[in-house]
Length: 389
Ligand code: HMG
Image 1 (cartoon, rainbow, N blue to C red):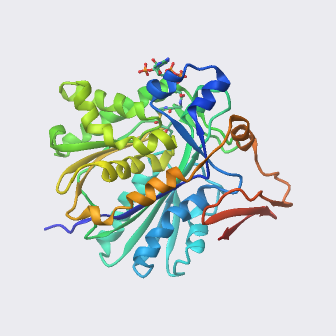
Image 2: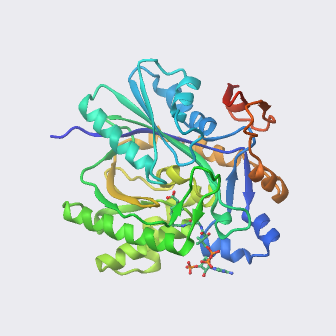
């Protein structure tokens, strides 16, 4: 019998501020139905001046360390596409902020929004090699598009941390995976840009092609059939995208695409993403948190996951929810991470969006805005200085 490996714990963090889409719509004159219904978004998380992928990642992982300790963690894999350094892994800062043992390996992974799934699968491989070890996976991103562009409404920010090990308390991750890679320029961010470049409609088509390709390979690897799944978690750049993707999958497989069936399969996966916005690598796993926090007992049920990262790489895989998982959820804390955000007005959001550190190597303290457990205190001598509260 193969050993059971998967997600033992899952926790997330998001930002200090939130911009409701009503404020964006009032500013740019968009009919609010386009945001609320057309793309399925209510609001988006906006990082404070002293928040970034490190502070969010550490805030997401801290409750996991508090619950499980550090003894078995020998690897930290940090997935992001909004990297803060071309050489040093953001995971090393998180390792330090959390006081993890020096006998650890730490690395950063990138392939757009797909990176966290690569991290999860690599973690499973490490645990299979030595089942005594656990791997901390952190997926943290700030999604940033140009102001006044169509992408602006699909920004957001969050981090998800997952502890991967044997005998998981939440979900067993199964073989096989369906894989798909295609060299497309649907969304990308050259090193010299802070905001992503995107061809919106092309990115939607590329996502749908990737769903089809990953599923085709999954079926060829003797995966489960569509009707064996209790629910499907999709990468959610905006929540309506999950609906488009699932409709495409059902069509491809020759199933009915009735609205109710699609809503039943996805409805409980979108609650967190619809108010946080696109969190790139974290988005798929926020979908899982939302599902587990809201659904009736899913013990023994299979969940389908479709991870998509522009450029593009996709993977379809299944997880099975384990007995007593509800005792290990963080439902209260998850809701608190969302409700604790403070609304920012459009002008305040715009000022934060336009903010960046001077590149002169001087001392640049950041305004103290976040009330979270970790903050980016300054950039000094080209070094990021973090503080713990
Ligand atoms: P747009 O051109 O502003 O919007 O861009 P639209 O005109 O396509 O309208 C959006 C939807 O709202 C349409 O529905 C409209 O009909 C509807 P659809 O036809 O798609 O079903 N609509 C309304 N509905 C109700 N009431 C109304 C109303 N008006 C219009 N009054 C777009 C939208 C998503 C393209 C843009 O925001 C964008 O470029 N976003 C960024 C790219 C993106 O998120 N792509 C998704 C796939 S790629 C991906 O997932 C990877 C990614 O996460 C990056 C990574 O991997 O790292 C992005």
